[in-house]
Image (cartoon, rainbow, N blue to C red; front, side, top):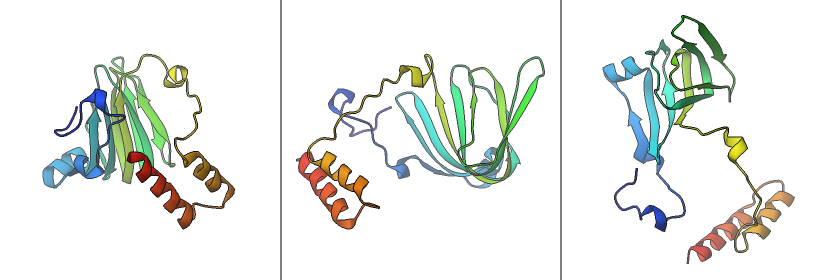
Length: 175
């Protein structure tokens, strides 16, 4: 999904969307029915990602035909519930920051939001495990940025002077 004004995919290095472009404020019956007060929702290149603030309620059950759905808790308390066609039910409480549940395609599921919560949801398709496919290899940062990165590791934090140098180097590199 490209936005008007975006360069063609072969002309860009990566996609960028401002959070405000995906901001949805849900009000009235729509907010009540969905149990979402607001969210930032981005859909790009077949990937759906949103950050949602939830209100306490039992959400409508649903399933996805071809997508996995991952839900990670940022704050609050949410009970994830899934069931199959034979009547087996499984629940897991997400109560600590970073707790994660992944629903595979075709599995009926819902969330019971016990108190105001914030979650990250990612819907995706997969061809095997991501960590098995990810052949991450370290590469040095371009320009003088590798030196600045080393400086930040030697100092207790990113100082104003180093931050300024990094910003200047990035501006110079953009040309």
